[in-house]
Image 1 (cartoon, rainbow, N blue to C red):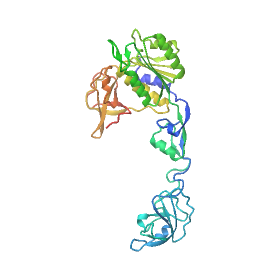
Image 2: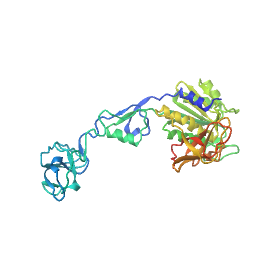
Image 3: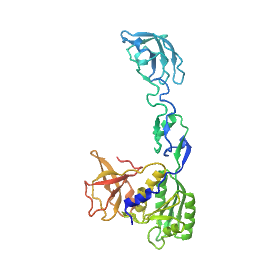
Image 4: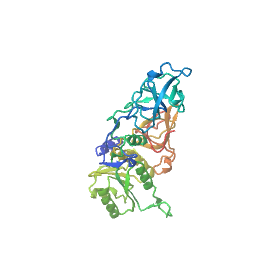
Length: 407
Protein backbone atom coordinates (compact mmCIF):
# COMPACT_ATOMS: atom_id res chain seq x y z
CA UNK A 1 0.00 0.00 0.00
CA UNK A 2 1.35 3.45 -0.97
CA UNK A 3 0.68 6.86 0.52
CA UNK A 4 -1.37 9.45 -1.33
CA UNK A 5 1.75 11.54 -1.97
CA UNK A 6 3.71 8.56 -3.33
CA UNK A 7 0.81 7.53 -5.57
CA UNK A 8 0.54 11.05 -6.99
CA UNK A 9 4.25 11.01 -7.87
CA UNK A 10 3.91 7.65 -9.60
CA UNK A 11 1.02 8.89 -11.74
CA UNK A 12 2.86 12.12 -12.59
CA UNK A 13 5.62 10.11 -14.30
CA UNK A 14 3.10 8.78 -16.81
CA UNK A 15 1.27 12.00 -17.69
CA UNK A 16 1.93 13.45 -21.12
CA UNK A 17 -0.29 15.85 -23.09
CA UNK A 18 -2.17 14.19 -25.91
CA UNK A 19 -1.59 15.03 -29.55
CA UNK A 20 -2.56 18.35 -31.13
CA UNK A 21 -5.28 19.13 -33.65
CA UNK A 22 -6.55 22.21 -35.43
CA UNK A 23 -10.26 22.89 -34.98
CA UNK A 24 -12.66 25.69 -36.04
CA UNK A 25 -13.04 28.53 -33.58
CA UNK A 26 -16.63 27.57 -32.80
CA UNK A 27 -15.40 24.18 -31.55
CA UNK A 28 -12.65 25.57 -29.29
CA UNK A 29 -14.73 26.30 -26.20
CA UNK A 30 -13.31 24.56 -23.15
CA UNK A 31 -10.29 23.19 -25.01
CA UNK A 32 -6.65 23.86 -24.05
CA UNK A 33 -4.48 25.80 -26.46
CA UNK A 34 -1.54 23.96 -27.99
CA UNK A 35 0.01 27.16 -29.35
CA UNK A 36 0.52 30.77 -28.39
CA UNK A 37 -2.01 33.15 -29.89
CA UNK A 38 -0.32 36.27 -31.30
CA UNK A 39 -1.82 39.58 -32.34
CA UNK A 40 -2.12 39.49 -36.13
CA UNK A 41 -2.35 43.29 -36.21
CA UNK A 42 -2.16 46.17 -33.74
CA UNK A 43 -5.21 47.01 -31.67
CA UNK A 44 -6.64 49.44 -32.53
CA UNK A 45 -5.64 48.92 -36.14
CA UNK A 46 -5.79 52.67 -36.79
CA UNK A 47 -6.37 55.90 -34.88
CA UNK A 48 -10.12 56.10 -34.33
CA UNK A 49 -12.72 58.13 -32.53
CA UNK A 50 -13.80 57.02 -29.05
CA UNK A 51 -16.97 59.13 -29.24
CA UNK A 52 -19.60 60.39 -31.62
CA UNK A 53 -18.52 63.94 -32.37
CA UNK A 54 -16.18 66.06 -34.44
CA UNK A 55 -12.51 65.56 -35.23
CA UNK A 56 -10.64 68.84 -34.76
CA UNK A 57 -7.23 70.41 -34.38
CA UNK A 58 -6.88 71.05 -30.64
CA UNK A 59 -5.11 74.32 -31.38
CA UNK A 60 -8.26 75.60 -33.10
CA UNK A 61 -10.28 75.26 -29.87
CA UNK A 62 -8.03 77.31 -27.58
CA UNK A 63 -10.15 79.66 -25.45
CA UNK A 64 -13.46 78.22 -26.62
CA UNK A 65 -16.39 78.26 -24.15
CA UNK A 66 -20.14 77.80 -24.39
CA UNK A 67 -20.56 81.55 -24.02
CA UNK A 68 -17.86 82.31 -26.60
CA UNK A 69 -17.60 79.26 -28.89
CA UNK A 70 -15.17 78.71 -31.73
CA UNK A 71 -16.77 78.13 -35.14
CA UNK A 72 -15.22 75.53 -37.44
CA UNK A 73 -15.99 74.63 -41.03
CA UNK A 74 -17.48 71.15 -41.48
CA UNK A 75 -15.83 69.50 -44.49
CA UNK A 76 -17.43 66.04 -44.30
CA UNK A 77 -18.14 63.03 -42.17
CA UNK A 78 -16.71 59.56 -41.54
CA UNK A 79 -18.70 56.60 -40.19
CA UNK A 80 -17.28 53.44 -38.64
CA UNK A 81 -16.15 51.12 -41.41
CA UNK A 82 -15.45 53.90 -43.89
CA UNK A 83 -11.94 54.92 -44.99
CA UNK A 84 -10.57 58.02 -43.31
CA UNK A 85 -9.42 59.72 -46.50
CA UNK A 86 -10.25 63.31 -45.48
CA UNK A 87 -7.56 65.78 -44.45
CA UNK A 88 -8.16 68.53 -41.94
CA UNK A 89 -6.78 72.04 -42.36
CA UNK A 90 -6.76 74.95 -39.94
CA UNK A 91 -10.25 76.04 -38.93
CA UNK A 92 -11.91 72.83 -40.16
CA UNK A 93 -13.60 69.82 -38.55
CA UNK A 94 -14.95 66.44 -39.63
CA UNK A 95 -17.95 64.61 -38.23
CA UNK A 96 -16.77 61.28 -36.75
CA UNK A 97 -18.83 58.39 -35.47
CA UNK A 98 -17.52 56.11 -32.70
CA UNK A 99 -14.90 53.78 -34.18
CA UNK A 100 -14.44 55.88 -37.32
CA UNK A 101 -10.88 56.65 -38.50
CA UNK A 102 -9.55 59.99 -37.34
CA UNK A 103 -8.75 62.10 -40.46
CA UNK A 104 -5.25 63.33 -41.15
CA UNK A 105 -4.53 66.65 -39.48
CA UNK A 106 -6.89 66.09 -36.55
CA UNK A 107 -5.46 65.47 -33.07
CA UNK A 108 -8.62 65.45 -30.91
CA UNK A 109 -12.32 64.65 -30.97
CA UNK A 110 -14.99 66.86 -29.44
CA UNK A 111 -18.12 65.03 -28.28
CA UNK A 112 -21.29 66.02 -30.06
CA UNK A 113 -22.70 67.09 -26.66
CA UNK A 114 -19.97 69.77 -26.49
CA UNK A 115 -20.88 71.26 -29.86
CA UNK A 116 -23.78 72.84 -31.69
CA UNK A 117 -24.57 69.40 -33.13
CA UNK A 118 -25.13 67.90 -36.52
CA UNK A 119 -27.88 70.22 -37.84
CA UNK A 120 -26.01 73.47 -38.23
CA UNK A 121 -25.04 73.33 -41.87
CA UNK A 122 -21.39 73.79 -42.72
CA UNK A 123 -20.48 75.61 -39.53
CA UNK A 124 -20.04 73.81 -36.19
CA UNK A 125 -19.67 75.66 -32.92
CA UNK A 126 -17.33 74.12 -30.37
CA UNK A 127 -18.28 74.85 -26.75
CA UNK A 128 -15.03 73.92 -24.97
CA UNK A 129 -11.29 73.95 -25.30
CA UNK A 130 -9.85 70.49 -25.87
CA UNK A 131 -6.40 68.97 -25.72
CA UNK A 132 -4.40 66.83 -28.17
CA UNK A 133 -5.34 63.13 -27.85
CA UNK A 134 -8.75 63.75 -26.30
CA UNK A 135 -11.25 60.98 -27.22
CA UNK A 136 -8.87 59.31 -29.68
CA UNK A 137 -7.95 55.63 -29.54
CA UNK A 138 -4.45 55.40 -30.97
CA UNK A 139 -3.17 52.64 -33.20
CA UNK A 140 -1.59 49.86 -31.11
CA UNK A 141 -2.30 51.51 -27.73
CA UNK A 142 -4.01 48.36 -26.45
CA UNK A 143 -1.91 45.67 -28.15
CA UNK A 144 1.05 45.84 -30.51
CA UNK A 145 1.21 43.65 -33.59
CA UNK A 146 2.93 40.34 -32.79
CA UNK A 147 2.29 40.56 -29.05
CA UNK A 148 1.34 37.35 -27.26
CA UNK A 149 -2.38 37.48 -26.54
CA UNK A 150 -2.93 34.06 -24.98
CA UNK A 151 -0.34 31.59 -23.78
CA UNK A 152 -0.19 27.93 -24.75
CA UNK A 153 -1.96 25.60 -22.28
CA UNK A 154 -4.60 28.18 -21.34
CA UNK A 155 -8.18 26.94 -21.33
CA UNK A 156 -10.39 28.64 -23.90
CA UNK A 157 -13.22 30.54 -22.20
CA UNK A 158 -15.48 33.28 -23.62
CA UNK A 159 -12.66 35.81 -23.09
CA UNK A 160 -10.21 33.77 -25.17
CA UNK A 161 -12.82 33.05 -27.84
CA UNK A 162 -13.67 36.73 -28.14
CA UNK A 163 -10.03 37.74 -28.32
CA UNK A 164 -9.23 35.18 -31.01
CA UNK A 165 -12.27 36.25 -33.02
CA UNK A 166 -11.25 39.91 -32.64
CA UNK A 167 -7.92 39.14 -34.25
CA UNK A 168 -9.39 37.07 -37.07
CA UNK A 169 -8.56 33.55 -35.92
CA UNK A 170 -11.00 31.20 -37.63
CA UNK A 171 -9.33 28.15 -36.11
CA UNK A 172 -6.80 27.25 -33.43
CA UNK A 173 -4.45 24.43 -32.52
CA UNK A 174 -5.61 22.66 -29.36
CA UNK A 175 -4.76 19.48 -27.50
CA UNK A 176 -6.86 16.49 -28.43
CA UNK A 177 -9.57 15.50 -25.99
CA UNK A 178 -8.97 12.05 -24.48
CA UNK A 179 -10.95 9.01 -25.55
CA UNK A 180 -12.40 7.32 -22.49
CA UNK A 181 -13.66 3.80 -21.73
CA UNK A 182 -15.95 3.54 -18.71
CA UNK A 183 -17.20 0.33 -17.21
CA UNK A 184 -18.73 -1.04 -14.04
CA UNK A 185 -18.72 -4.68 -12.98
CA UNK A 186 -21.14 -6.75 -10.98
CA UNK A 187 -24.05 -9.15 -11.45
CA UNK A 188 -25.97 -7.15 -8.88
CA UNK A 189 -26.07 -3.93 -10.93
CA UNK A 190 -29.38 -2.92 -12.46
CA UNK A 191 -30.10 0.09 -14.66
CA UNK A 192 -32.34 2.77 -13.10
CA UNK A 193 -35.94 2.46 -14.22
CA UNK A 194 -36.05 -1.31 -13.88
CA UNK A 195 -37.50 -3.18 -10.96
CA UNK A 196 -35.04 -4.36 -8.32
CA UNK A 197 -34.97 -8.01 -7.35
CA UNK A 198 -33.63 -9.17 -3.97
CA UNK A 199 -29.89 -8.49 -3.68
CA UNK A 200 -29.76 -6.10 -6.63
CA UNK A 201 -28.76 -2.41 -6.58
CA UNK A 202 -29.12 0.38 -9.06
CA UNK A 203 -26.03 1.25 -11.07
CA UNK A 204 -25.37 4.83 -9.95
CA UNK A 205 -21.60 4.89 -10.45
CA UNK A 206 -21.63 4.89 -14.23
CA UNK A 207 -23.98 7.88 -14.23
CA UNK A 208 -21.61 9.74 -11.91
CA UNK A 209 -18.52 8.79 -13.91
CA UNK A 210 -20.17 9.65 -17.24
CA UNK A 211 -21.22 13.09 -16.09
CA UNK A 212 -17.85 13.86 -14.51
CA UNK A 213 -16.01 12.69 -17.63
CA UNK A 214 -18.21 14.85 -19.85
CA UNK A 215 -17.84 17.85 -17.54
CA UNK A 216 -14.08 17.54 -17.92
CA UNK A 217 -14.43 17.66 -21.70
CA UNK A 218 -13.32 14.10 -22.51
CA UNK A 219 -15.00 11.90 -25.11
CA UNK A 220 -16.65 8.71 -23.87
CA UNK A 221 -16.01 6.08 -26.54
CA UNK A 222 -17.02 2.96 -24.60
CA UNK A 223 -19.55 2.72 -21.76
CA UNK A 224 -20.74 -0.60 -20.42
CA UNK A 225 -21.92 -2.52 -17.38
CA UNK A 226 -20.23 -5.91 -17.36
CA UNK A 227 -21.39 -8.95 -15.44
CA UNK A 228 -19.00 -10.96 -13.28
CA UNK A 229 -17.78 -12.81 -16.35
CA UNK A 230 -14.01 -12.88 -17.05
CA UNK A 231 -14.51 -13.52 -20.77
CA UNK A 232 -16.87 -10.55 -21.25
CA UNK A 233 -14.51 -8.36 -19.25
CA UNK A 234 -11.49 -9.45 -21.28
CA UNK A 235 -13.29 -8.76 -24.56
CA UNK A 236 -14.25 -5.24 -23.43
CA UNK A 237 -10.78 -4.40 -22.12
CA UNK A 238 -9.00 -5.76 -25.18
CA UNK A 239 -10.89 -3.31 -27.35
CA UNK A 240 -10.55 -0.44 -24.85
CA UNK A 241 -6.77 -0.80 -24.70
CA UNK A 242 -6.61 -0.44 -28.49
CA UNK A 243 -9.05 2.44 -28.90
CA UNK A 244 -8.90 4.60 -25.76
CA UNK A 245 -6.46 6.87 -23.96
CA UNK A 246 -7.88 6.30 -20.49
CA UNK A 247 -9.81 3.38 -19.00
CA UNK A 248 -11.82 3.95 -15.83
CA UNK A 249 -13.55 1.16 -13.95
CA UNK A 250 -15.96 1.08 -11.04
CA UNK A 251 -15.66 -2.03 -8.89
CA UNK A 252 -13.84 -5.29 -9.39
CA UNK A 253 -10.46 -4.19 -8.02
CA UNK A 254 -10.90 -5.27 -4.40
CA UNK A 255 -10.33 -8.76 -2.96
CA UNK A 256 -13.76 -10.32 -3.54
CA UNK A 257 -14.27 -13.71 -5.14
CA UNK A 258 -15.55 -12.09 -8.36
CA UNK A 259 -13.09 -9.19 -8.54
CA UNK A 260 -11.46 -10.15 -11.83
CA UNK A 261 -10.32 -6.75 -13.09
CA UNK A 262 -6.69 -6.84 -11.91
CA UNK A 263 -6.26 -10.39 -13.17
CA UNK A 264 -7.58 -9.52 -16.62
CA UNK A 265 -5.43 -6.39 -16.79
CA UNK A 266 -2.37 -8.50 -16.07
CA UNK A 267 -3.30 -11.00 -18.80
CA UNK A 268 -3.62 -8.15 -21.29
CA UNK A 269 -0.17 -6.73 -20.52
CA UNK A 270 -1.15 -3.86 -18.24
CA UNK A 271 1.68 -2.84 -15.93
CA UNK A 272 0.36 -2.34 -12.40
CA UNK A 273 1.97 0.62 -10.61
CA UNK A 274 -0.07 0.42 -7.44
CA UNK A 275 -3.24 -1.22 -6.20
CA UNK A 276 -3.89 0.09 -2.70
CA UNK A 277 -3.56 3.63 -1.41
CA UNK A 278 -3.48 4.70 2.23
CA UNK A 279 -6.67 6.76 2.00
CA UNK A 280 -10.20 6.70 3.31
CA UNK A 281 -12.47 6.12 1.52
CA UNK A 282 -11.17 4.21 -1.48
CA UNK A 283 -8.19 2.14 -0.35
CA UNK A 284 -8.49 -0.38 -3.24
CA UNK A 285 -7.42 2.08 -5.96
CA UNK A 286 -5.66 0.67 -9.02
CA UNK A 287 -3.38 2.51 -11.42
CA UNK A 288 -1.66 0.91 -14.37
CA UNK A 289 -0.46 1.62 -17.89
CA UNK A 290 -0.33 -0.17 -21.20
CA UNK A 291 1.74 1.67 -23.78
CA UNK A 292 0.18 5.18 -23.71
CA UNK A 293 -3.10 4.09 -22.11
CA UNK A 294 -3.75 5.08 -18.48
CA UNK A 295 -5.90 2.74 -16.40
CA UNK A 296 -7.72 3.66 -13.20
CA UNK A 297 -9.60 1.09 -11.16
CA UNK A 298 -11.92 2.85 -8.74
CA UNK A 299 -13.77 1.15 -5.87
CA UNK A 300 -17.41 0.18 -6.26
CA UNK A 301 -18.73 2.00 -3.19
CA UNK A 302 -20.43 5.15 -4.54
CA UNK A 303 -18.63 7.74 -2.40
CA UNK A 304 -15.26 6.04 -2.93
CA UNK A 305 -15.89 6.03 -6.67
CA UNK A 306 -17.01 9.68 -6.82
CA UNK A 307 -14.23 11.06 -4.63
CA UNK A 308 -11.72 8.73 -6.28
CA UNK A 309 -12.53 10.19 -9.68
CA UNK A 310 -12.21 13.78 -8.44
CA UNK A 311 -8.96 13.18 -6.58
CA UNK A 312 -7.20 10.91 -9.06
CA UNK A 313 -8.81 10.95 -12.49
CA UNK A 314 -10.10 14.52 -12.88
CA UNK A 315 -6.62 16.10 -12.43
CA UNK A 316 -5.06 13.62 -14.84
CA UNK A 317 -7.65 14.29 -17.56
CA UNK A 318 -7.04 18.00 -17.09
CA UNK A 319 -3.28 17.61 -17.51
CA UNK A 320 -3.29 15.31 -20.53
CA UNK A 321 -5.58 17.84 -22.24
CA UNK A 322 -2.91 20.51 -21.67
CA UNK A 323 -4.14 21.99 -18.38
CA UNK A 324 -2.82 22.00 -14.85
CA UNK A 325 -3.80 20.24 -11.66
CA UNK A 326 -6.12 22.29 -9.48
CA UNK A 327 -4.31 23.48 -6.37
CA UNK A 328 -5.83 22.63 -3.02
CA UNK A 329 -6.87 25.69 -1.02
CA UNK A 330 -6.89 26.15 2.77
CA UNK A 331 -10.06 26.67 4.78
CA UNK A 332 -11.05 26.76 8.44
CA UNK A 333 -13.29 24.09 9.94
CA UNK A 334 -16.50 25.18 11.62
CA UNK A 335 -17.18 21.70 12.99
CA UNK A 336 -15.18 18.63 13.97
CA UNK A 337 -13.53 16.59 11.21
CA UNK A 338 -13.14 12.83 11.87
CA UNK A 339 -9.48 12.39 10.95
CA UNK A 340 -8.07 8.88 10.44
CA UNK A 341 -5.04 7.77 12.45
CA UNK A 342 -3.20 6.13 9.54
CA UNK A 343 -4.84 7.27 6.29
CA UNK A 344 -5.41 10.47 4.37
CA UNK A 345 -9.09 11.26 4.86
CA UNK A 346 -11.49 12.71 2.28
CA UNK A 347 -15.07 13.84 2.91
CA UNK A 348 -17.60 15.78 0.90
CA UNK A 349 -18.22 19.17 2.44
CA UNK A 350 -19.62 22.65 2.13
CA UNK A 351 -17.41 25.73 1.92
CA UNK A 352 -18.45 29.35 2.19
CA UNK A 353 -17.11 32.77 3.07
CA UNK A 354 -17.70 34.01 6.58
CA UNK A 355 -16.42 37.38 7.78
CA UNK A 356 -13.89 37.46 4.97
CA UNK A 357 -12.51 33.97 5.62
CA UNK A 358 -13.08 30.71 3.75
CA UNK A 359 -14.65 28.20 6.11
CA UNK A 360 -16.02 24.70 5.65
CA UNK A 361 -17.88 21.85 7.27
CA UNK A 362 -17.74 18.14 6.34
CA UNK A 363 -20.82 16.10 5.62
CA UNK A 364 -22.22 14.36 8.68
CA UNK A 365 -22.61 11.21 6.56
CA UNK A 366 -19.21 9.54 6.46
CA UNK A 367 -19.93 6.05 5.11
CA UNK A 368 -18.44 5.17 1.73
CA UNK A 369 -21.87 3.90 0.64
CA UNK A 370 -23.68 7.15 1.53
CA UNK A 371 -23.81 8.93 -1.84
CA UNK A 372 -26.34 11.42 -0.46
CA UNK A 373 -23.35 13.02 1.32
CA UNK A 374 -22.49 14.56 -2.06
CA UNK A 375 -25.79 16.45 -2.24
CA UNK A 376 -25.27 20.20 -1.69
CA UNK A 377 -21.51 19.64 -1.37
CA UNK A 378 -19.27 22.10 -3.20
CA UNK A 379 -15.91 20.71 -2.13
CA UNK A 380 -13.97 17.68 -0.97
CA UNK A 381 -12.17 18.20 2.33
CA UNK A 382 -8.80 16.52 2.81
CA UNK A 383 -6.79 15.92 5.98
CA UNK A 384 -3.52 14.15 6.63
CA UNK A 385 -3.43 11.21 9.07
CA UNK A 386 -3.56 12.08 12.75
CA UNK A 387 -4.15 10.62 16.19
CA UNK A 388 -7.22 12.72 16.96
CA UNK A 389 -10.11 14.41 15.23
CA UNK A 390 -9.65 18.00 14.09
CA UNK A 391 -11.71 20.50 16.03
CA UNK A 392 -13.44 23.64 14.80
CA UNK A 393 -10.96 26.39 14.02
CA UNK A 394 -8.32 24.07 12.55
CA UNK A 395 -7.12 24.41 8.98
CA UNK A 396 -7.83 21.81 6.27
CA UNK A 397 -7.39 21.59 2.49
CA UNK A 398 -10.18 21.75 -0.07
CA UNK A 399 -10.66 20.62 -3.63
CA UNK A 400 -13.45 22.79 -4.99
CA UNK A 401 -16.04 21.02 -7.15
CA UNK A 402 -15.93 23.16 -10.33
CA UNK A 403 -19.67 23.01 -10.96
CA UNK A 404 -20.63 24.20 -7.46
CA UNK A 405 -19.58 27.80 -6.70
CA UNK A 406 -18.60 29.01 -3.24
CA UNK A 407 -21.06 31.58 -1.94
